[in-house]
Image 1 (cartoon, helix red, strand yellow):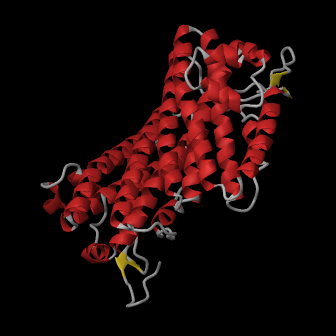
Image 2: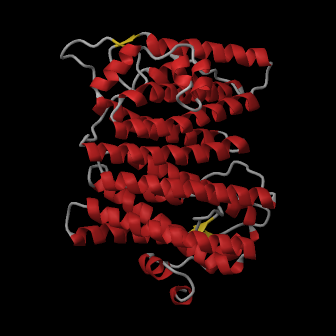
Length: 219
Length: 219
């Protein structure tokens, strides 16, 4: 899958090389069956990405490089949020409450408690979330209708850039050896791949292998 | 003071007419003595304004007009935040922790618990914070050095616009009579004027009448 995408879309080779597993084709099929949930959850993800960036700014105000990057990243995610909401309105997708997927919480429970371990872990998580988002936009874009496909292909480059920025910050604030950092990345790589590939009864933008029951779609 | 400013700066007449009291000249004198605290607290205020906008978006996702406005407002506040941080760096103002003023907490404790009263109260508070910010930028701008004065005069128009947007949303989501809304605005007008004019041992962007003791500046 990585090879298939790498020639088509900028930024995707780096992203797929970073991830521990490709998105299961079954997730893609499910996404095409649930375009409303996909858009609704995508809007939530953009808003949460902005909110996470702000929480890092509040928590680490003296980390100047992080502060500027997160501020610009939050502004970009908010612009994407507005674009998703506009698309939702155009398509008649009504806003409604949607529970979060297990994904971000599943990654965050691995964050170490002391500094600078905590910040490094959170930045690694940021890198994986952005990388996975880019990878899913890449597999979805060619299968969606023209309007949504174009939109997702456009977002992909931004997410791939955010992935690199998060990873660069993790390298910047990491205090130990390179091997130690690699080890942390590997730990998150495996956890993230499992969250995206293991059976998951709930369909969301970052959910795992769909195991829906007819008429019993978890909302 | 309103008359003095109204001819000089766009958006200020509406703002001063809305506020229950002008900023005490003693606050302005104190601000000129504490440019570092002013910048540091100003940066915090911009970030908090963005964060408050996001929290409203999370809380009222179906209020489409609010959601779009808050998203754009948050983006603008973040851009201001970046500009204040850049000015701080240029001027050698080191980032350091600063406790919040009594101002926002003092207003928020008046927020009613049930909807739509709660949202209307929060939007009225937003309007007052933006109005007061614009008013203080207006009184400060002519007394600061050229660089900071130009910057604050530039922010003023944005804050005055945000004030109008918050007020417009309060009108939009208010369910009762116009008189009832006016009554709530009057309640916040008095509370806000007191917070900005009553003795306040701590100097901040939104603090009250300075009552500093020599060598005992509350940080």
